Amino acid sequence: MKLNPEDFQAQTLLLAPQWTLIDEVPQADLAVLIRNGRFEAVGPAQDLRQQFPQIPMQALPGRLLMPGLIDTHHHLTQGYGKALAFGEPSEIFKRIWVPLEQHLTEEDLYLSAKLTALEALRGGFTTVCDAGTRSQAGLSAIESAVQQVGIRCVLAKICHDLGSSEREIEALMAQAQQHLTHNRPDSGLHASLGIAIPEAASDAMLHRVAHLCREAGVPFQVHINEHLASVERSLVARGLRPLQVLQQADALGPELLAAHVTLVTPSELSQLSDAGAAVSYNPVASSWKGNAVAPALQMHSMGIRLGLGTDGTRGDAFRLMDAAETAQRLTVGMAVGDFSMGAGWTWLRMASAGGADAAHLSHITGRIAPGLAADCLLLDVNVPELTPTWDLGWELVRLAHSGLIEMVMVGGRMRLWKGWPLDWDAQALMQRVRERAAEAVRSAPIHRVHPTSAKARQAQRAPGQD
Ligand SMILES: [Zn+2]
Image (cartoon, rainbow, N blue to C red; front, side, top):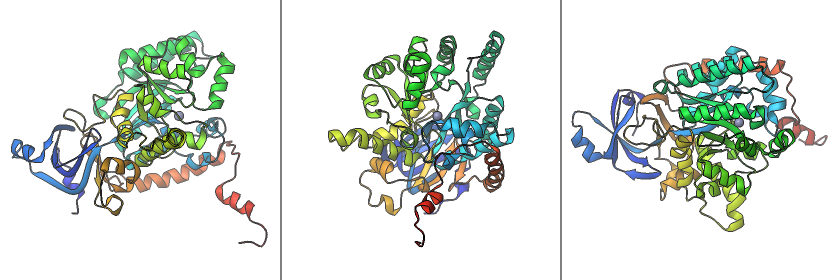
């Protein structure tokens, strides 16, 4: 059955998809009432038809309605780089991101954030947590970009104090306080504070920022134990591992949203669990630039709160869930003969309700449940990939892909139809990005260690070979 975008533009919608994903379980013959941006009622289609006889029910055969997914770790202003970082050794920020960011104008920051937010939305993410940008221009660029695209965003203001004077520090704290009061959930903007890595701030600052976040009930975003280089850097600078730096500063609590956490000792796992901290498990980032994978299933079994994150690698929620499962299979499951590795649903949960919890947004998004914002995806499941269907939960992790997403809705408002916005010009955005990115990359002192794929191929080719 062919659907039209007009079918989803009313303020009140009573949808009856073939399947609805409720708490990681696909259920048939339910209906969902969406009104004023929220899920108002969820139940058997027959019941809702009787309860709301005045609202026309839209049957959606061959479709699955599922919660919009959550990217718990992103860098929206890094959209110009992408494949520049491919095949590069771990500390990409030093050789690519920092040189590139220094050559970004305010317009570039805005374009990059808008492009990246659109990619995320196309990939099935209705919420992204941005780990922060150092500049005020970056912060306001992200704010405008995400609001125009219509993705929900948890946006960190970075609070680094090393090398700053007393006065500068107090000014920074005033800005941080102001950023926190900026929380505008109705517009999809959610405040957060961040420190890129623990040794980038003094113990006093770590403590203050963590406690500000705790009081405000917002996440404190930090990269923790990302790879060997970062652990060694912390050991050399502070004599402590990154997580120990937080612990020493009394900055380890339920507010923490720690990205990566790949190299983790048994006692660090206990500390994270005891503190009620959350981890953003970033399997694609680990495989592209790390040297270990977070023991996500072990963390999960210890009760550590977990979401999934892209770290700006690629904005595809389905490929991220697949990578999350595969990375655990390769690093843990194969060695111990665990073929189930979370039984499918674990990865769906980390990408939805788990991610919402890690982002301190459980009261707003992550599930299809009455009272929550209508952040959801409509998938066409009447496709060869999912035929026959025996286990839709598993199939969503291993067989589904973002190409199946027909409609993306955030806060009850349709934002994408078949991958594209209908209310603004994505083609014009991409054209401008191509022009501006070429200019920024040309002028930035980027240092790449490896050649492009084509140059590597040409270098391999012996004379006379084609
Ligand atoms: Zn990151």
